[in-house]
Length: 65
View 1 (cartoon, rainbow, N blue to C red):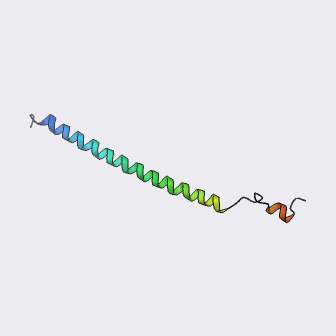
View 2: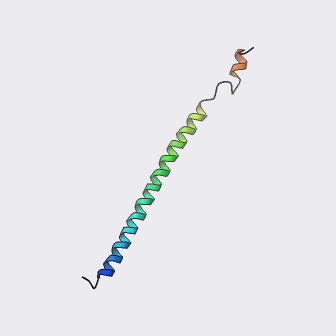
View 3: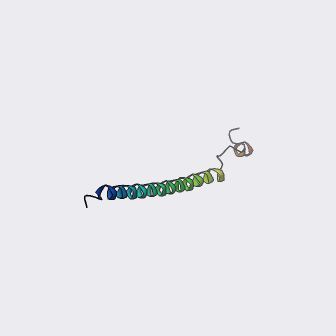
């Protein structure tokens, strides 16, 4: 066991780093997808509703005259 200890530790270190890299990549993909979904939803809400007065409604109704 002592003879191969360094080799087994090297293998364990490699597998741990590989697993960590995969987990971090998946987390980054998940966060990017969530940010994209939240961002596109907010943009869609902004595009579908115009602020009052931004397109002539107040002037057309004679408000403020």
